[in-house]
Image (cartoon, rainbow, N blue to C red; front, side, top):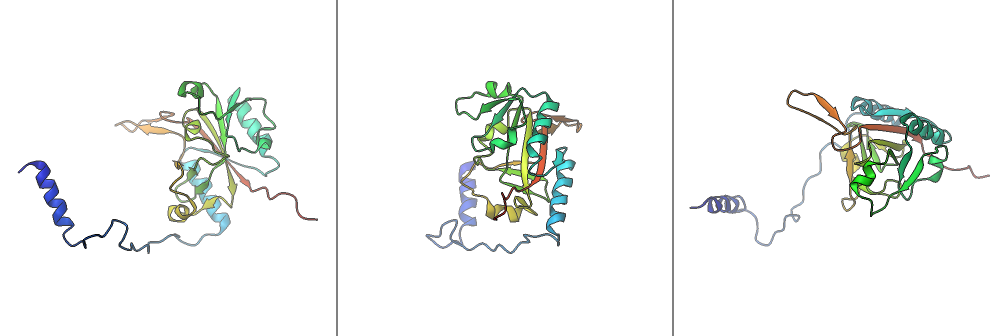
Length: 221
């Protein structure tokens, strides 16, 4: 008997009690696991996100919606950024205080061209407090996945508390599996066998996260 025959025989034995015609998604799967871990206020959830982002060596900033353009401009200036990738749906006010040259998110850009860009500024789809994770889904203010994987400096804006959830199980129902999801926990990093950490191996070396209250626009008169 060949190895292939052995494997197939084991598969048949494992499926022996499955009714004929039943598909892989037909049986109901219980979803009774915990979605919320402990009791936290909205403010505590945001604080937990900030703590875990910092644990992963992201640099966390806070500001008001009005101060956001000035903060982004300062971060890009401190970085010495001369060019910045801009997703097509990014609020133009966010970059109104920077003199860096805007580089549009183009499908024709090569990895080499993106590597020559100094920074990228995006929004996000969600942020998960318990894991310190940012989730991007390719939305208008996030652009193609590669613009956040090639440039060495990523500034990501998280609107709080609207875009913050406590746990991964809370995040999943708010995300579409049909979109290109990118889960980011800190700057790109890896460790060798001696646990020497090296950052910037397969993504941005520096991740800066700005927590800003959502701009709800002018109040009705």
